[in-house]
Amino acid sequence: MIDNGELPVGAFVMSTDAATTAIFGNVGYDFVIIDREHGPNDVTSTLNHIRAAEANGVIPIVRVLENSATLIQSTLDIGAHGIVVPKIATADDARRAVLASRYVAGGRGMCQATEAARWAHDGWHAHKASSNENVLIIPLVETAEGIENLDEIAAVDGIDFIFFGLADLSQDLGIDMYADADQLIRIWDESVVRARRADVHLGSPLGYGFDHGDYGTVDGDLMMLRAGAESALAPLRKIAPGSAANRSDPLLTAQR
Image 1 (cartoon, rainbow, N blue to C red):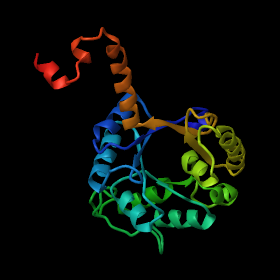
Image 2: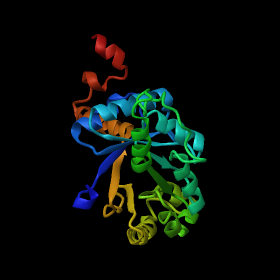
Image 3: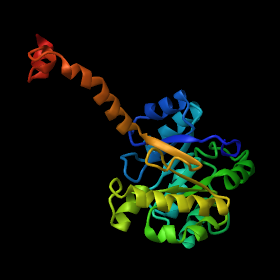
């Protein structure tokens, strides 16, 4: 898509209910990022999200809690197509994450009895080759050190995508994400140039002034649910005082 000038659009998934991933796929999102850093998803719910993604034509990417070889391997074994790795600040951090994702000496552990390998000895070599070629390791650059070392991170073999973490970056810089957005946008603009110079795709949350990257996310599932719930409720709260919707006890109201 990117090569054709299209903008891949995804969303973060915080809910443990795989129906949210199915909905994103069904309406045409390109990818989801199943969040295990800030969300409550465990291995089983993440697996269900991955299955829902594959059944509904959306790419399942998982954000793990930290740059851990164990977490990266276990997440890929249940079928994730890519891993977002938080707090990547140096090229060594990036190399460590890539190594954990590859079937090579010292890298990802080999096991045929996994979801990703379809629980079979047959086809192992094809699975190994496909995984090494196609699994995405996406550094989340969200610290001042990471921005400083962006060129070196982008140059690491196996890094084709980077995600710009504006919230943690603002915290690391000691600025306000909203009031000081101009500073973040300036850093973003410079980062886009640096990433493209290295032939790496840079993505970010969309709608904050970072909309000219190569891919992005529009929001999270539960935030969308809240916004929709507020939007649906707002006009109903404007009906005449004393009506059923404005009574203090909604349970009593429902019984009348």
